Image 1 (cartoon, one colour):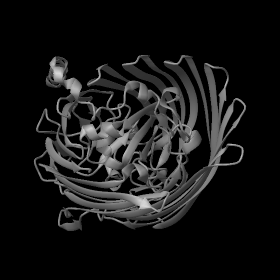
Image 2 (cartoon, rainbow, N blue to C red):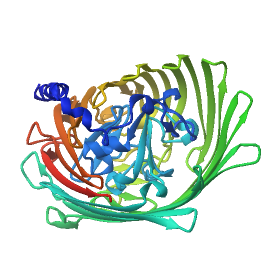
Image 3 (cartoon, helix red, strand yellow):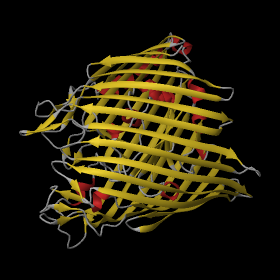
Image 4 (cartoon, one colour):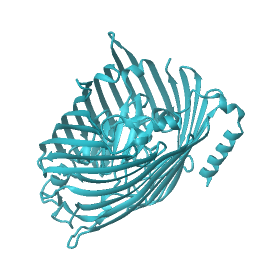
Length: 627
Protein backbone atom coordinates (compact mmCIF):
# COMPACT_ATOMS: atom_id res chain seq x y z
CA UNK A 1 0.00 0.00 0.00
CA UNK A 2 2.80 2.42 0.83
CA UNK A 3 4.39 1.73 -2.54
CA UNK A 4 1.11 2.24 -4.39
CA UNK A 5 0.49 5.50 -2.50
CA UNK A 6 3.98 6.73 -3.36
CA UNK A 7 3.38 6.00 -7.04
CA UNK A 8 0.01 7.77 -6.97
CA UNK A 9 1.49 10.79 -5.19
CA UNK A 10 4.28 11.00 -7.73
CA UNK A 11 1.82 10.93 -10.63
CA UNK A 12 -0.21 13.72 -9.01
CA UNK A 13 2.91 15.79 -8.38
CA UNK A 14 4.02 15.43 -11.99
CA UNK A 15 0.57 16.33 -13.27
CA UNK A 16 0.47 19.49 -11.19
CA UNK A 17 3.97 20.63 -12.04
CA UNK A 18 3.79 23.17 -14.90
CA UNK A 19 7.57 23.43 -15.14
CA UNK A 20 8.13 19.73 -15.83
CA UNK A 21 7.72 20.30 -19.57
CA UNK A 22 11.07 22.09 -19.64
CA UNK A 23 13.19 18.98 -19.10
CA UNK A 24 13.79 16.89 -22.20
CA UNK A 25 17.49 15.91 -22.37
CA UNK A 26 17.07 12.95 -20.00
CA UNK A 27 13.91 11.66 -21.73
CA UNK A 28 13.77 8.09 -22.99
CA UNK A 29 12.82 7.07 -26.49
CA UNK A 30 9.21 7.75 -27.43
CA UNK A 31 6.92 4.73 -27.54
CA UNK A 32 6.84 4.84 -31.32
CA UNK A 33 10.64 4.83 -31.42
CA UNK A 34 10.72 1.87 -29.02
CA UNK A 35 8.47 -0.13 -31.36
CA UNK A 36 10.81 0.59 -34.27
CA UNK A 37 14.04 -0.19 -32.44
CA UNK A 38 16.24 -2.75 -34.21
CA UNK A 39 16.77 -6.04 -32.32
CA UNK A 40 18.80 -9.09 -33.28
CA UNK A 41 18.14 -11.85 -30.71
CA UNK A 42 15.26 -13.67 -32.40
CA UNK A 43 16.68 -14.28 -35.89
CA UNK A 44 20.32 -13.29 -35.24
CA UNK A 45 19.84 -10.37 -37.64
CA UNK A 46 18.30 -6.91 -37.34
CA UNK A 47 14.51 -6.59 -37.33
CA UNK A 48 12.01 -4.18 -35.79
CA UNK A 49 10.83 -4.94 -32.27
CA UNK A 50 7.20 -4.30 -33.23
CA UNK A 51 7.33 -7.07 -35.85
CA UNK A 52 9.08 -9.79 -33.80
CA UNK A 53 7.13 -13.02 -33.27
CA UNK A 54 8.43 -13.63 -29.76
CA UNK A 55 8.00 -12.47 -26.18
CA UNK A 56 10.82 -9.92 -26.21
CA UNK A 57 11.44 -6.98 -23.88
CA UNK A 58 14.16 -4.40 -24.55
CA UNK A 59 15.96 -2.65 -21.69
CA UNK A 60 17.27 0.59 -23.14
CA UNK A 61 20.49 2.36 -22.17
CA UNK A 62 18.49 5.30 -20.80
CA UNK A 63 16.30 2.98 -18.70
CA UNK A 64 19.43 1.50 -17.11
CA UNK A 65 20.85 4.94 -16.40
CA UNK A 66 17.61 6.25 -14.88
CA UNK A 67 17.18 3.19 -12.65
CA UNK A 68 20.51 3.70 -10.88
CA UNK A 69 21.60 0.11 -11.60
CA UNK A 70 25.28 -0.45 -10.86
CA UNK A 71 25.83 -4.02 -12.04
CA UNK A 72 24.34 -6.30 -14.63
CA UNK A 73 21.78 -8.28 -12.54
CA UNK A 74 20.30 -5.03 -11.23
CA UNK A 75 19.76 -3.88 -14.81
CA UNK A 76 18.11 -7.21 -15.67
CA UNK A 77 15.54 -6.69 -12.91
CA UNK A 78 14.02 -3.99 -15.15
CA UNK A 79 12.66 -6.71 -17.47
CA UNK A 80 9.16 -7.81 -16.35
CA UNK A 81 9.61 -11.19 -18.05
CA UNK A 82 12.58 -12.18 -15.87
CA UNK A 83 12.65 -13.49 -12.30
CA UNK A 84 15.63 -11.90 -10.52
CA UNK A 85 16.40 -12.84 -6.91
CA UNK A 86 19.47 -11.74 -5.00
CA UNK A 87 21.12 -14.60 -3.10
CA UNK A 88 23.83 -12.71 -1.18
CA UNK A 89 26.20 -9.78 -1.66
CA UNK A 90 27.46 -11.18 -4.98
CA UNK A 91 25.28 -14.02 -6.27
CA UNK A 92 21.91 -13.84 -8.02
CA UNK A 93 19.34 -16.37 -9.19
CA UNK A 94 17.95 -15.29 -12.57
CA UNK A 95 15.59 -17.08 -14.94
CA UNK A 96 12.56 -16.73 -17.18
CA UNK A 97 9.48 -18.92 -16.88
CA UNK A 98 10.58 -20.77 -13.77
CA UNK A 99 13.23 -23.21 -12.50
CA UNK A 100 15.06 -20.44 -10.69
CA UNK A 101 18.08 -21.07 -8.47
CA UNK A 102 21.70 -19.93 -8.26
CA UNK A 103 22.76 -22.60 -10.78
CA UNK A 104 19.83 -22.23 -13.18
CA UNK A 105 20.54 -24.08 -16.42
CA UNK A 106 17.78 -23.23 -18.92
CA UNK A 107 18.65 -19.61 -19.73
CA UNK A 108 21.17 -18.64 -22.40
CA UNK A 109 23.11 -15.41 -21.78
CA UNK A 110 25.28 -13.59 -24.33
CA UNK A 111 27.46 -10.49 -24.05
CA UNK A 112 28.19 -9.07 -27.51
CA UNK A 113 27.64 -12.51 -29.02
CA UNK A 114 29.85 -14.36 -26.52
CA UNK A 115 28.05 -17.12 -24.59
CA UNK A 116 28.80 -16.70 -20.89
CA UNK A 117 27.25 -19.78 -19.30
CA UNK A 118 29.69 -22.30 -17.79
CA UNK A 119 29.61 -25.50 -19.91
CA UNK A 120 30.43 -27.74 -16.94
CA UNK A 121 27.04 -26.98 -15.35
CA UNK A 122 25.11 -25.19 -18.15
CA UNK A 123 24.38 -22.14 -16.02
CA UNK A 124 25.65 -18.64 -15.29
CA UNK A 125 27.78 -17.63 -12.30
CA UNK A 126 26.45 -14.10 -11.99
CA UNK A 127 29.24 -12.98 -9.67
CA UNK A 128 31.63 -13.58 -12.59
CA UNK A 129 29.70 -11.56 -15.21
CA UNK A 130 29.59 -7.78 -15.42
CA UNK A 131 30.05 -4.92 -17.86
CA UNK A 132 30.44 -1.17 -17.65
CA UNK A 133 26.74 -0.33 -17.78
CA UNK A 134 27.37 3.03 -19.47
CA UNK A 135 28.67 1.04 -22.45
CA UNK A 136 25.45 -0.97 -22.87
CA UNK A 137 23.34 0.02 -25.88
CA UNK A 138 20.44 -2.26 -24.97
CA UNK A 139 19.62 -5.61 -23.38
CA UNK A 140 17.27 -7.85 -25.35
CA UNK A 141 15.37 -10.29 -23.12
CA UNK A 142 13.52 -13.14 -24.81
CA UNK A 143 11.35 -15.23 -22.53
CA UNK A 144 10.73 -18.53 -24.26
CA UNK A 145 12.77 -20.93 -26.36
CA UNK A 146 15.39 -19.71 -28.81
CA UNK A 147 16.95 -23.09 -29.48
CA UNK A 148 16.31 -23.15 -33.24
CA UNK A 149 18.95 -20.44 -33.72
CA UNK A 150 20.89 -20.40 -30.41
CA UNK A 151 20.99 -24.13 -29.59
CA UNK A 152 20.70 -26.20 -26.43
CA UNK A 153 20.21 -24.36 -23.13
CA UNK A 154 18.11 -21.63 -24.81
CA UNK A 155 15.02 -23.32 -23.33
CA UNK A 156 13.34 -20.75 -21.08
CA UNK A 157 14.90 -17.64 -22.52
CA UNK A 158 17.77 -15.73 -24.10
CA UNK A 159 19.43 -12.60 -22.68
CA UNK A 160 21.49 -10.71 -25.26
CA UNK A 161 23.57 -7.83 -23.87
CA UNK A 162 24.60 -5.52 -26.71
CA UNK A 163 27.23 -2.85 -26.02
CA UNK A 164 27.74 0.39 -27.90
CA UNK A 165 30.24 0.71 -30.71
CA UNK A 166 33.51 2.49 -30.01
CA UNK A 167 32.24 5.34 -32.20
CA UNK A 168 29.43 5.95 -29.68
CA UNK A 169 31.79 6.09 -26.68
CA UNK A 170 34.40 8.65 -27.70
CA UNK A 171 36.00 10.97 -25.19
CA UNK A 172 36.29 10.67 -21.42
CA UNK A 173 33.86 9.18 -18.91
CA UNK A 174 34.52 9.12 -15.16
CA UNK A 175 32.24 7.77 -12.44
CA UNK A 176 32.59 7.62 -8.67
CA UNK A 177 30.03 6.78 -6.04
CA UNK A 178 29.36 5.20 -2.71
CA UNK A 179 26.68 4.29 -0.23
CA UNK A 180 25.97 2.39 2.93
CA UNK A 181 26.59 -1.02 1.27
CA UNK A 182 28.92 -0.49 -1.68
CA UNK A 183 31.28 1.80 -3.56
CA UNK A 184 32.19 2.10 -7.24
CA UNK A 185 34.68 3.91 -9.47
CA UNK A 186 35.04 3.68 -13.25
CA UNK A 187 37.05 5.39 -15.97
CA UNK A 188 36.65 5.10 -19.74
CA UNK A 189 38.33 6.78 -22.68
CA UNK A 190 37.55 6.52 -26.39
CA UNK A 191 39.61 7.75 -29.32
CA UNK A 192 40.52 7.25 -32.99
CA UNK A 193 42.61 4.63 -34.78
CA UNK A 194 43.63 6.25 -38.05
CA UNK A 195 40.95 7.53 -40.39
CA UNK A 196 38.34 4.76 -39.98
CA UNK A 197 39.08 3.05 -36.65
CA UNK A 198 37.77 3.85 -33.19
CA UNK A 199 38.64 2.44 -29.78
CA UNK A 200 37.71 2.62 -26.12
CA UNK A 201 39.34 1.35 -22.95
CA UNK A 202 37.82 1.19 -19.47
CA UNK A 203 38.51 0.18 -15.89
CA UNK A 204 35.95 -0.48 -13.14
CA UNK A 205 36.38 -1.07 -9.39
CA UNK A 206 33.62 -2.17 -7.02
CA UNK A 207 33.36 -3.11 -3.34
CA UNK A 208 30.38 -4.69 -1.58
CA UNK A 209 29.87 -4.99 2.14
CA UNK A 210 28.85 -8.32 3.63
CA UNK A 211 25.22 -9.23 4.19
CA UNK A 212 23.66 -10.44 7.43
CA UNK A 213 21.71 -13.67 7.82
CA UNK A 214 18.20 -13.94 9.18
CA UNK A 215 19.75 -15.24 12.40
CA UNK A 216 21.63 -11.93 12.73
CA UNK A 217 25.11 -13.30 11.96
CA UNK A 218 27.48 -11.65 9.51
CA UNK A 219 27.78 -13.60 6.24
CA UNK A 220 31.32 -13.80 4.88
CA UNK A 221 30.39 -12.49 1.42
CA UNK A 222 31.91 -9.01 1.40
CA UNK A 223 33.86 -8.59 -1.84
CA UNK A 224 35.93 -6.41 -4.09
CA UNK A 225 36.20 -6.65 -7.87
CA UNK A 226 38.38 -5.08 -10.56
CA UNK A 227 37.60 -5.24 -14.28
CA UNK A 228 39.12 -3.68 -17.37
CA UNK A 229 38.51 -4.01 -21.06
CA UNK A 230 38.77 -2.54 -24.52
CA UNK A 231 36.97 -2.41 -27.84
CA UNK A 232 38.24 -1.54 -31.33
CA UNK A 233 36.00 -1.03 -34.36
CA UNK A 234 36.66 -0.47 -38.02
CA UNK A 235 33.04 -0.05 -39.13
CA UNK A 236 31.20 1.72 -41.92
CA UNK A 237 27.42 1.55 -41.95
CA UNK A 238 27.52 -1.07 -39.20
CA UNK A 239 29.77 -3.39 -41.24
CA UNK A 240 33.43 -4.21 -40.75
CA UNK A 241 35.65 -5.58 -38.01
CA UNK A 242 35.19 -5.40 -34.22
CA UNK A 243 37.57 -6.69 -31.53
CA UNK A 244 36.31 -6.77 -27.92
CA UNK A 245 38.05 -7.99 -24.76
CA UNK A 246 37.69 -7.94 -20.97
CA UNK A 247 39.60 -9.18 -17.91
CA UNK A 248 38.55 -9.26 -14.26
CA UNK A 249 39.56 -10.41 -10.78
CA UNK A 250 37.44 -10.62 -7.62
CA UNK A 251 37.77 -11.85 -4.02
CA UNK A 252 35.39 -12.37 -1.13
CA UNK A 253 36.04 -12.47 2.60
CA UNK A 254 37.65 -15.52 4.17
CA UNK A 255 35.23 -18.19 5.37
CA UNK A 256 35.35 -21.09 7.78
CA UNK A 257 33.45 -24.38 8.14
CA UNK A 258 33.73 -25.21 11.80
CA UNK A 259 37.45 -25.36 12.51
CA UNK A 260 38.33 -25.67 8.80
CA UNK A 261 39.60 -22.44 7.20
CA UNK A 262 38.25 -22.19 3.65
CA UNK A 263 39.50 -18.80 2.50
CA UNK A 264 37.33 -16.67 0.23
CA UNK A 265 35.89 -17.25 -3.22
CA UNK A 266 38.35 -15.98 -5.80
CA UNK A 267 37.25 -15.51 -9.41
CA UNK A 268 39.21 -14.34 -12.43
CA UNK A 269 38.97 -14.47 -16.18
CA UNK A 270 39.74 -12.89 -19.53
CA UNK A 271 38.17 -13.05 -22.98
CA UNK A 272 38.68 -11.71 -26.48
CA UNK A 273 36.21 -11.71 -29.38
CA UNK A 274 36.64 -10.80 -33.06
CA UNK A 275 33.70 -10.32 -35.42
CA UNK A 276 33.52 -9.32 -39.09
CA UNK A 277 30.30 -8.45 -40.92
CA UNK A 278 29.96 -7.53 -44.55
CA UNK A 279 27.85 -7.54 -47.70
CA UNK A 280 28.69 -9.99 -50.45
CA UNK A 281 28.15 -9.67 -54.17
CA UNK A 282 24.43 -9.95 -54.81
CA UNK A 283 23.50 -8.22 -51.54
CA UNK A 284 23.62 -11.15 -49.10
CA UNK A 285 25.14 -10.63 -45.64
CA UNK A 286 27.93 -12.63 -44.00
CA UNK A 287 29.03 -12.61 -40.35
CA UNK A 288 32.13 -14.38 -39.02
CA UNK A 289 32.90 -14.53 -35.31
CA UNK A 290 35.37 -16.21 -32.98
CA UNK A 291 36.21 -15.83 -29.30
CA UNK A 292 38.44 -17.25 -26.60
CA UNK A 293 37.33 -17.21 -22.97
CA UNK A 294 39.20 -18.47 -19.93
CA UNK A 295 38.04 -18.26 -16.35
CA UNK A 296 38.84 -19.66 -12.95
CA UNK A 297 36.85 -19.99 -9.74
CA UNK A 298 38.56 -20.97 -6.48
CA UNK A 299 36.09 -22.22 -3.87
CA UNK A 300 37.55 -24.66 -1.35
CA UNK A 301 34.10 -25.37 0.09
CA UNK A 302 32.30 -26.45 -3.12
CA UNK A 303 34.86 -27.09 -5.92
CA UNK A 304 37.29 -25.04 -8.01
CA UNK A 305 36.84 -25.10 -11.80
CA UNK A 306 39.31 -23.69 -14.32
CA UNK A 307 37.96 -23.48 -17.85
CA UNK A 308 39.00 -22.48 -21.38
CA UNK A 309 36.49 -22.06 -24.22
CA UNK A 310 37.21 -21.59 -27.92
CA UNK A 311 34.27 -20.82 -30.22
CA UNK A 312 33.87 -20.13 -33.96
CA UNK A 313 30.67 -19.46 -35.90
CA UNK A 314 29.39 -18.00 -39.16
CA UNK A 315 26.03 -16.81 -40.46
CA UNK A 316 24.86 -16.08 -44.01
CA UNK A 317 21.65 -14.10 -44.65
CA UNK A 318 20.05 -13.71 -48.05
CA UNK A 319 16.73 -12.86 -49.69
CA UNK A 320 15.20 -15.17 -52.31
CA UNK A 321 11.89 -13.75 -53.47
CA UNK A 322 9.52 -13.80 -50.50
CA UNK A 323 12.03 -15.80 -48.42
CA UNK A 324 14.43 -14.24 -45.89
CA UNK A 325 16.86 -17.09 -45.20
CA UNK A 326 19.40 -17.17 -42.39
CA UNK A 327 21.72 -20.13 -42.05
CA UNK A 328 25.04 -20.87 -40.40
CA UNK A 329 27.01 -23.12 -38.12
CA UNK A 330 29.67 -23.24 -35.48
CA UNK A 331 32.25 -25.17 -33.49
CA UNK A 332 33.00 -24.90 -29.76
CA UNK A 333 35.52 -26.61 -27.52
CA UNK A 334 35.70 -26.36 -23.72
CA UNK A 335 38.57 -27.69 -21.63
CA UNK A 336 38.26 -27.73 -17.87
CA UNK A 337 40.05 -28.89 -14.78
CA UNK A 338 37.93 -29.02 -11.61
CA UNK A 339 39.77 -29.35 -8.31
CA UNK A 340 37.75 -30.97 -5.50
CA UNK A 341 36.39 -28.98 -2.58
CA UNK A 342 35.28 -29.93 0.89
CA UNK A 343 31.88 -31.13 -0.42
CA UNK A 344 32.13 -32.04 -4.10
CA UNK A 345 34.44 -33.40 -6.76
CA UNK A 346 34.20 -34.21 -10.45
CA UNK A 347 35.38 -37.57 -11.78
CA UNK A 348 37.37 -37.32 -13.97
CA UNK A 349 38.83 -34.03 -12.76
CA UNK A 350 39.73 -32.89 -16.29
CA UNK A 351 37.66 -33.02 -19.45
CA UNK A 352 37.55 -31.74 -23.02
CA UNK A 353 34.16 -31.36 -24.66
CA UNK A 354 33.23 -30.45 -28.22
CA UNK A 355 30.06 -29.08 -29.81
CA UNK A 356 29.22 -28.46 -33.45
CA UNK A 357 26.04 -27.13 -34.99
CA UNK A 358 24.24 -26.16 -38.16
CA UNK A 359 21.05 -24.07 -38.34
CA UNK A 360 18.70 -22.67 -40.95
CA UNK A 361 15.68 -20.38 -40.61
CA UNK A 362 13.29 -19.16 -43.31
CA UNK A 363 11.08 -16.11 -42.79
CA UNK A 364 8.47 -16.44 -45.51
CA UNK A 365 6.27 -13.41 -46.26
CA UNK A 366 2.93 -15.05 -47.15
CA UNK A 367 1.16 -11.73 -47.70
CA UNK A 368 1.20 -8.16 -46.45
CA UNK A 369 -0.29 -9.36 -43.18
CA UNK A 370 0.94 -12.94 -42.72
CA UNK A 371 4.44 -14.32 -42.14
CA UNK A 372 5.63 -17.87 -41.47
CA UNK A 373 8.96 -18.51 -39.74
CA UNK A 374 10.30 -22.06 -39.88
CA UNK A 375 13.70 -23.11 -38.64
CA UNK A 376 15.74 -25.83 -37.05
CA UNK A 377 19.13 -26.30 -35.48
CA UNK A 378 21.14 -29.52 -35.42
CA UNK A 379 23.60 -29.56 -32.54
CA UNK A 380 26.03 -32.30 -31.55
CA UNK A 381 27.39 -32.82 -28.04
CA UNK A 382 29.67 -35.52 -26.66
CA UNK A 383 27.01 -37.03 -24.37
CA UNK A 384 23.87 -37.52 -26.48
CA UNK A 385 25.10 -36.95 -30.03
CA UNK A 386 22.90 -34.96 -32.40
CA UNK A 387 19.93 -33.00 -31.03
CA UNK A 388 17.22 -31.63 -33.33
CA UNK A 389 15.73 -28.28 -32.31
CA UNK A 390 12.88 -27.23 -34.65
CA UNK A 391 10.66 -24.16 -34.40
CA UNK A 392 7.58 -22.96 -36.27
CA UNK A 393 6.05 -19.47 -35.84
CA UNK A 394 3.16 -17.74 -37.55
CA UNK A 395 2.47 -14.00 -37.27
CA UNK A 396 -0.49 -11.90 -38.37
CA UNK A 397 -0.39 -8.11 -38.51
CA UNK A 398 -3.93 -6.88 -39.24
CA UNK A 399 -2.59 -3.32 -39.07
CA UNK A 400 0.69 -1.52 -38.65
CA UNK A 401 -0.12 -1.03 -34.96
CA UNK A 402 -0.71 -4.64 -33.88
CA UNK A 403 0.68 -8.14 -34.31
CA UNK A 404 -0.67 -11.54 -33.28
CA UNK A 405 1.74 -14.46 -33.25
CA UNK A 406 1.85 -18.11 -32.24
CA UNK A 407 4.64 -20.65 -32.13
CA UNK A 408 5.69 -24.19 -31.38
CA UNK A 409 9.27 -25.15 -30.49
CA UNK A 410 11.21 -28.15 -29.31
CA UNK A 411 14.08 -27.23 -27.01
CA UNK A 412 16.48 -29.32 -24.93
CA UNK A 413 18.83 -28.82 -22.03
CA UNK A 414 21.76 -31.05 -22.91
CA UNK A 415 23.72 -32.92 -20.20
CA UNK A 416 26.62 -31.17 -18.53
CA UNK A 417 29.45 -32.49 -16.37
CA UNK A 418 27.41 -31.60 -13.29
CA UNK A 419 24.85 -34.23 -14.37
CA UNK A 420 27.35 -36.96 -15.29
CA UNK A 421 30.55 -36.48 -13.29
CA UNK A 422 29.64 -34.88 -9.92
CA UNK A 423 30.54 -36.76 -6.72
CA UNK A 424 29.52 -36.20 -3.07
CA UNK A 425 31.74 -36.52 -1.05
CA UNK A 426 34.94 -36.05 -3.09
CA UNK A 427 36.21 -39.56 -2.30
CA UNK A 428 34.36 -42.91 -2.29
CA UNK A 429 32.11 -44.26 -0.97
CA UNK A 430 29.87 -41.70 -2.71
CA UNK A 431 26.50 -40.65 -1.30
CA UNK A 432 25.48 -38.95 -4.57
CA UNK A 433 27.01 -39.40 -8.01
CA UNK A 434 26.34 -38.14 -11.51
CA UNK A 435 24.29 -40.43 -13.72
CA UNK A 436 26.23 -42.10 -16.53
CA UNK A 437 22.97 -42.53 -18.45
CA UNK A 438 21.66 -38.99 -17.95
CA UNK A 439 20.20 -37.64 -21.23
CA UNK A 440 18.79 -34.33 -22.41
CA UNK A 441 15.82 -32.68 -20.74
CA UNK A 442 13.14 -31.95 -23.34
CA UNK A 443 10.53 -29.19 -23.65
CA UNK A 444 7.76 -28.87 -26.22
CA UNK A 445 6.59 -25.26 -26.06
CA UNK A 446 3.40 -23.61 -27.35
CA UNK A 447 3.02 -19.81 -27.27
CA UNK A 448 0.40 -17.25 -28.22
CA UNK A 449 1.31 -13.57 -28.17
CA UNK A 450 -0.06 -10.12 -28.92
CA UNK A 451 1.78 -6.83 -29.33
CA UNK A 452 0.11 -3.52 -30.07
CA UNK A 453 0.43 0.23 -30.09
CA UNK A 454 -3.21 1.36 -30.07
CA UNK A 455 -2.15 5.03 -29.90
CA UNK A 456 1.08 6.98 -30.09
CA UNK A 457 1.32 7.10 -26.28
CA UNK A 458 0.48 3.46 -25.39
CA UNK A 459 2.10 0.15 -26.25
CA UNK A 460 1.55 -3.27 -24.75
CA UNK A 461 2.54 -6.90 -25.06
CA UNK A 462 1.06 -10.14 -23.69
CA UNK A 463 2.03 -13.80 -24.08
CA UNK A 464 0.54 -17.03 -22.79
CA UNK A 465 2.61 -20.19 -22.93
CA UNK A 466 2.56 -23.91 -22.15
CA UNK A 467 5.60 -26.17 -21.70
CA UNK A 468 5.36 -29.93 -21.86
CA UNK A 469 8.39 -31.28 -20.00
CA UNK A 470 9.90 -34.75 -20.11
CA UNK A 471 13.04 -36.33 -18.65
CA UNK A 472 13.78 -33.51 -16.19
CA UNK A 473 16.68 -34.01 -13.79
CA UNK A 474 15.88 -36.05 -10.67
CA UNK A 475 17.73 -37.94 -7.96
CA UNK A 476 17.51 -41.03 -5.78
CA UNK A 477 17.57 -41.75 -2.09
CA UNK A 478 21.15 -41.92 -0.76
CA UNK A 479 23.40 -43.73 -0.36
CA UNK A 480 24.56 -44.62 -3.87
CA UNK A 481 22.15 -42.10 -5.39
CA UNK A 482 22.59 -41.19 -9.04
CA UNK A 483 21.30 -38.31 -11.12
CA UNK A 484 18.44 -39.49 -13.33
CA UNK A 485 15.77 -38.21 -15.77
CA UNK A 486 12.62 -39.14 -13.84
CA UNK A 487 10.49 -35.98 -13.63
CA UNK A 488 7.78 -35.03 -16.16
CA UNK A 489 4.99 -32.50 -16.27
CA UNK A 490 4.11 -29.03 -17.49
CA UNK A 491 4.45 -25.33 -16.76
CA UNK A 492 2.21 -22.57 -18.02
CA UNK A 493 1.89 -18.88 -17.51
CA UNK A 494 1.22 -15.33 -18.64
CA UNK A 495 3.63 -12.46 -19.29
CA UNK A 496 2.33 -8.96 -19.93
CA UNK A 497 3.64 -5.43 -19.85
CA UNK A 498 2.53 -2.00 -21.00
CA UNK A 499 3.83 1.55 -21.27
CA UNK A 500 1.77 4.72 -21.23
CA UNK A 501 3.18 8.17 -21.94
CA UNK A 502 0.28 10.53 -21.20
CA UNK A 503 2.59 13.57 -21.27
CA UNK A 504 5.95 14.22 -22.84
CA UNK A 505 7.57 14.37 -19.42
CA UNK A 506 5.71 11.45 -17.80
CA UNK A 507 5.93 7.75 -18.65
CA UNK A 508 4.21 4.97 -16.70
CA UNK A 509 4.87 1.26 -17.13
CA UNK A 510 3.61 -1.97 -15.60
CA UNK A 511 4.52 -5.64 -15.82
CA UNK A 512 2.87 -8.88 -14.69
CA UNK A 513 4.23 -12.43 -14.59
CA UNK A 514 2.11 -15.46 -13.64
CA UNK A 515 3.50 -19.00 -13.43
CA UNK A 516 1.98 -22.39 -12.61
CA UNK A 517 4.07 -25.58 -12.37
CA UNK A 518 2.63 -29.10 -12.50
CA UNK A 519 5.58 -31.48 -12.22
CA UNK A 520 5.80 -34.97 -10.72
CA UNK A 521 8.30 -37.79 -10.39
CA UNK A 522 7.72 -40.88 -12.50
CA UNK A 523 6.34 -44.04 -10.93
CA UNK A 524 9.08 -46.02 -9.21
CA UNK A 525 11.38 -43.04 -8.63
CA UNK A 526 12.91 -42.72 -5.16
CA UNK A 527 13.75 -39.03 -5.53
CA UNK A 528 13.56 -37.62 -1.94
CA UNK A 529 13.01 -33.99 -3.00
CA UNK A 530 11.07 -34.28 -6.23
CA UNK A 531 10.40 -31.20 -8.41
CA UNK A 532 11.32 -28.78 -5.59
CA UNK A 533 15.01 -29.36 -6.37
CA UNK A 534 14.51 -27.95 -9.90
CA UNK A 535 13.98 -24.37 -8.75
CA UNK A 536 12.08 -22.19 -6.33
CA UNK A 537 9.57 -19.98 -8.11
CA UNK A 538 6.93 -17.44 -7.15
CA UNK A 539 3.48 -17.96 -8.63
CA UNK A 540 3.24 -14.27 -9.43
CA UNK A 541 5.20 -11.04 -9.56
CA UNK A 542 4.40 -7.55 -10.76
CA UNK A 543 6.08 -4.18 -11.08
CA UNK A 544 4.99 -0.56 -11.57
CA UNK A 545 7.30 2.24 -12.71
CA UNK A 546 6.90 5.98 -13.14
CA UNK A 547 9.48 8.10 -14.93
CA UNK A 548 9.09 11.85 -14.55
CA UNK A 549 11.11 14.62 -16.18
CA UNK A 550 11.41 17.42 -13.60
CA UNK A 551 12.49 21.06 -14.01
CA UNK A 552 16.15 22.06 -14.38
CA UNK A 553 17.30 18.87 -16.10
CA UNK A 554 16.19 16.52 -13.34
CA UNK A 555 14.51 13.12 -13.63
CA UNK A 556 12.88 10.88 -11.04
CA UNK A 557 12.02 7.18 -11.28
CA UNK A 558 9.79 5.38 -8.79
CA UNK A 559 9.57 1.58 -8.99
CA UNK A 560 7.41 -0.76 -6.94
CA UNK A 561 8.01 -4.52 -7.22
CA UNK A 562 5.93 -7.29 -5.67
CA UNK A 563 7.23 -10.88 -5.61
CA UNK A 564 5.04 -13.70 -4.34
CA UNK A 565 6.16 -16.23 -1.76
CA UNK A 566 8.54 -19.01 -2.80
CA UNK A 567 7.29 -22.48 -1.85
CA UNK A 568 10.30 -24.69 -1.02
CA UNK A 569 12.29 -23.56 0.85
CA UNK A 570 9.72 -21.02 1.95
CA UNK A 571 10.69 -17.40 1.28
CA UNK A 572 8.03 -14.85 2.30
CA UNK A 573 6.51 -12.55 -0.30
CA UNK A 574 7.91 -9.04 -0.33
CA UNK A 575 7.25 -5.62 -1.81
CA UNK A 576 10.19 -3.39 -2.70
CA UNK A 577 10.22 0.33 -3.39
CA UNK A 578 13.14 1.84 -5.33
CA UNK A 579 13.73 5.54 -6.03
CA UNK A 580 16.27 7.06 -8.38
CA UNK A 581 16.88 10.78 -8.88
CA UNK A 582 19.18 12.11 -11.63
CA UNK A 583 20.23 15.75 -12.00
CA UNK A 584 22.04 16.84 -15.13
CA UNK A 585 24.06 19.62 -13.50
CA UNK A 586 25.44 20.70 -16.87
CA UNK A 587 25.93 19.06 -20.24
CA UNK A 588 28.80 16.85 -19.05
CA UNK A 589 28.09 16.37 -15.34
CA UNK A 590 25.36 14.22 -13.73
CA UNK A 591 24.56 13.62 -10.09
CA UNK A 592 22.32 10.71 -9.07
CA UNK A 593 20.90 9.37 -5.82
CA UNK A 594 19.40 5.88 -5.64
CA UNK A 595 17.50 4.18 -2.84
CA UNK A 596 16.66 0.47 -3.02
CA UNK A 597 14.40 -1.74 -0.88
CA UNK A 598 13.10 1.31 0.98
CA UNK A 599 9.99 -0.26 2.53
CA UNK A 600 11.75 -2.48 5.07
CA UNK A 601 15.19 -2.72 6.73
CA UNK A 602 15.93 -6.07 5.04
CA UNK A 603 14.26 -9.15 3.54
CA UNK A 604 15.38 -12.49 2.07
CA UNK A 605 14.88 -13.23 -1.63
CA UNK A 606 16.33 -16.75 -1.91
CA UNK A 607 17.76 -19.57 0.17
CA UNK A 608 17.07 -21.52 3.34
CA UNK A 609 16.46 -19.98 6.76
CA UNK A 610 18.08 -19.11 9.09
CA UNK A 611 21.43 -18.90 7.31
CA UNK A 612 20.25 -17.18 4.12
CA UNK A 613 21.26 -13.59 3.46
CA UNK A 614 18.87 -10.73 4.00
CA UNK A 615 18.96 -8.02 1.35
CA UNK A 616 19.15 -4.70 3.17
CA UNK A 617 17.91 -1.22 2.40
CA UNK A 618 20.56 0.77 0.53
CA UNK A 619 21.32 4.32 -0.54
CA UNK A 620 23.90 5.20 -3.21
CA UNK A 621 25.20 8.58 -4.46
CA UNK A 622 26.93 8.72 -7.85
CA UNK A 623 28.81 11.46 -9.74
CA UNK A 624 29.20 10.97 -13.50
CA UNK A 625 31.41 13.18 -15.68
CA UNK A 626 31.28 12.89 -19.48
CA UNK A 627 32.63 16.16 -20.96
